[in-house]
Image 1 (spheres, rainbow, N blue to C red):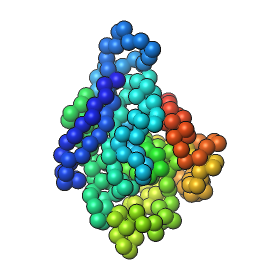
Image 2 (image 1 turned 135 degrees about the vertical axis):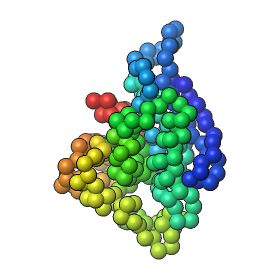
Image 3 (image 1 turned 45 degrees about the vertical axis):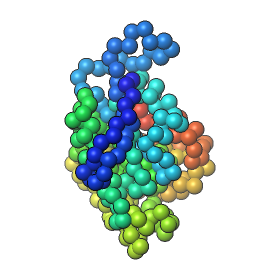
Length: 252
């Protein structure tokens, strides 16, 4: 894989920002210790991989073997910085939803050999990023074929009184329907084109109950939905394991 640290100006954010990008590499004869996968000809499929509340765009590379996992499938991976935005166009802050969901894919496709086809683009994340990935997948189903949340915060209204939400939703903490996963699942249920959805949660995770409720809500409608649970809590051991499951699910 080719590992790139990119810095560029975002019109949506009104400032320069950073992202880490993995691009499949053709021609690796002589590489020792990692056979990798077969890299298909043409433009690459791409996974947008979102970080959680306490982290940044470097964390997936630091805490998991995402480069090695992605190499098996020949898929590009883009890891943007999302601040503490919950991947929302913030009331007091920047338009991180517009940036991640719309502007960033266009920038990546312009810069790298990455496909713009819906069927080749996916979004996933953990915790805050899991919420963001599911929201983006549901709202941008013409752009992303699949979305995956690992230990996602799903019931945002249950957490909205937390101090870090004031910049996101304002002092009134008003959550729009398009930022509420439960409302979105219902709103998008009859769309002709819907994303494949994936969710995984650990039994000992504080978010287990709300993930169960979202699972039940999704089950009321005609979604292609994969759900996994196992022993585990809100930690990198769980996320490192299940990002491998996400990649296998994308390519099944």
